Image 1 (cartoon, rainbow, N blue to C red):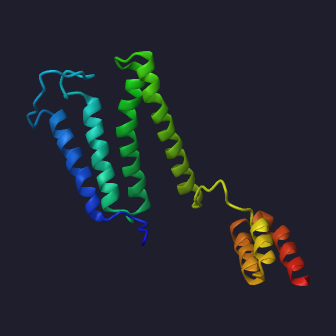
Image 2 (image 1 turned 60 degrees about the vertical axis):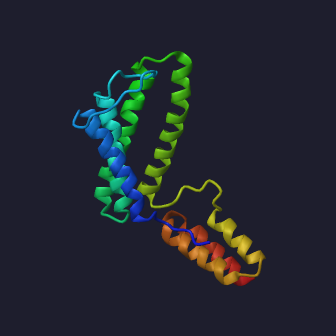
Image 3 (image 1 turned 45 degrees about the vertical axis):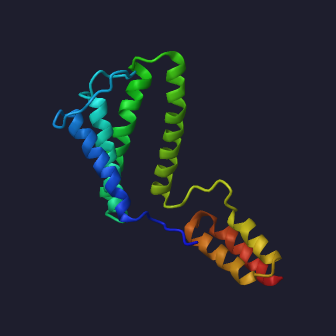
Length: 181
């Protein structure tokens, strides 16, 4: 099975369509029908929170449509999407018409989402994926050496020397020790 690094461009169409629909309803440009019995936070969809969610969906559609766009555009679109989702969510948690249990039920996924955003920001700032199980280069080289792959072990250490110039001497000593054996 082949894994795609980026979703297909057609995947952006539902996000753009839903976002545009929600935004037009919140601006009262499209009519909406209300069911006879319902329990909702708002009586009508004419609120900034509903419009912000529509803008967030449209931003995510743009992000999916142009996955390899300029980094500045990706960051700007990502901030719009983040603000569009989390501003209404934070309003709902902090000031919405909810009971204490409902606030907690909404706050837990919001916190997990913020952790995900923090990991994404870490990845974009450092250029390295967040992998808590990643091996230290010295440990990776030791494992490769014990499995009979000294060339790959040396390549791992040389790449680590380029990525971590502060550990250059330590890694060079490891390469020299590996060659002596």
